[in-house]
Length: 87
Image (cartoon, rainbow, N blue to C red; front, side):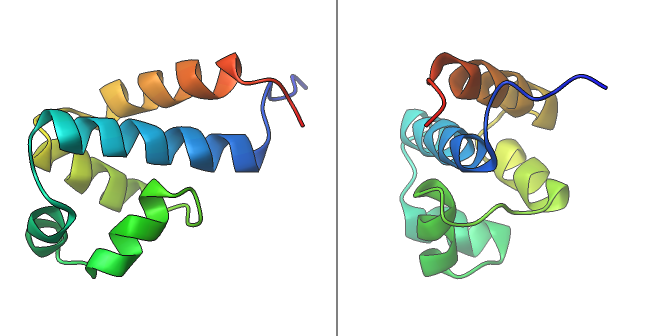
């Protein structure tokens, strides 16, 4: 069975970085996104900080708010996570 080229921690950080980047590109505040996604702003902050790994439904909802898709987010996360060396 093939092994992942990155750790869970690297994946969470990459996901957070991608979601933060998309939010900033959309020029939305964390508060605006949290309200639109029906989540607490502090939870969104922790996702962006790589402290939580949200479910696919939440990722898809956030992607839609940012004008993106789940697939686009997944592709960017994969590229971002693989770039970082394992620690």
